[in-house]
Length: 628
Image 1 (tube, rainbow, N blue to C red):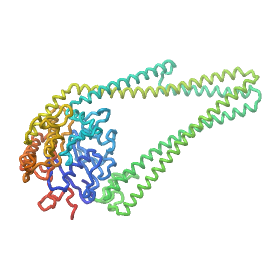
Image 2 (cartoon, one colour):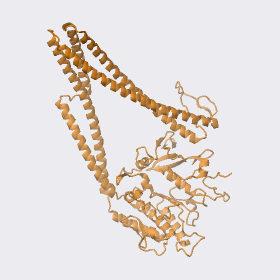
Image 3 (cartoon, helix red, strand yellow):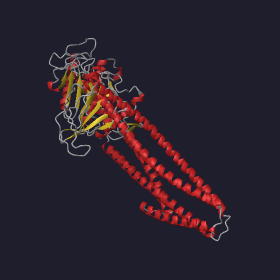
Image 4 (cartoon, rainbow, N blue to C red):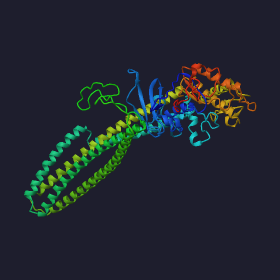
């Protein structure tokens, strides 16, 4: 946790990570902020965290690749930063990528990043995009959920429809995914066939009109035709001027025609200039947006401005000698923290940039409207040309001239040349469409091939999920047996709803919250254990359990009226957690929080211990300087 005065660090290890201490010392905060760094939308409003910290950072491995996820605290919609580890420098790189947390299905989302790095295939469940957040529900049991009778929101239909297929994915049954992939394969094949039909139609058209040539060949032919058309047009003007009866009206119309064509050419140039200008404005718009994001982070940091190291002068590119620590490389001045007035200046700068951004958006809109007006005016001038040409042709019918046949021949030749030029332009456009279509076909064929590979992998590695559920039930029952669950019988995981049953009764109908706590712990442990023994599983191999002793007896407390408030059960739970962690310590991480613990928990497994007052040699709490 990154603060202004100091950082608050907790280091974890493979196997068991036990966190203990009195209430209100920040134990649950640790697990909740791990969840927050992995994409949870919000965290609780911890006042001591707000006072001391600006960001939370999670250093983790994803498929043996190391990353640092840094996320602002109390600013839930801001993107996260992700840094890559550099093996050569043995540190995280200075550069980072932004990822959003608000929409997991987007390509640049944190959830998609985690899913890609864990090599979890992209898939849809009941028409909805599968997300890493669906998966992580099986890895984190919070303090409020440890004794919940609705542990996976299965009673909320809107949230529950992905629950069962998610468990199948975790345990690599993928029956639902297989059906989805087969449906995707069918749709993808249909799409490719449609694209191939379109491509065949375009190729046939090009062959029929004898325009099957390269773009450069088309451009050369077009240039030659334009030259020839210009020659014919000059000859036609000369014939008309020398061979027709004097007609002032015709001369006036021809002058209008010349001006209109010149105006259309000017309008085309103006359109191109406006388009280029809009492109530059959009680049500037993106720069303003990026600067605003940077200022947002700078305002959040509210502390030291990080110095910039220059290896060369930004003006002349000459090499710059490194200055003393905490001195600017360019001017040599001592770097200082910005004061309240400077902070106001930064906020004012952000406001000014935001005003510029909005003004720029309005100006871009005005330019788009101007472009539209130019286009409309250009079309209007073209219509005027057609009308004037029609008038000239009508007037020319009255000419009595030996050159009339020559004029008709030249007009016909110019028309034929115009048609050829138009066909060449059409050919170029069609060929560009053909290229785009071919690229699209190739991209979709690659996607179809990926789907076929996924289907093949699933079918080759598929198992009968009823057998998986049966194995899961045995582990679930065995864990409860090791917990010394009272009057244990008929404990299993249902093949119909994948939920736990004990004494033949669904877990939410047992009637004792102590029993529910044991059942929930056993349920998530059995899923993790089975995933570790399967040949392939998409479980993150991580389990966070908060307050495992909730509603159970401790070493000192027993309740004769509640068979689950028994010291023996409490000790058995911790004994099993320690043995489980020892068995699988190289394959997973188990995080356990509880105020109290037993002698089975080794000192080496206690990653952090708080005492609430700092008098017993331990930290006061997670924020250990909240009081002075």
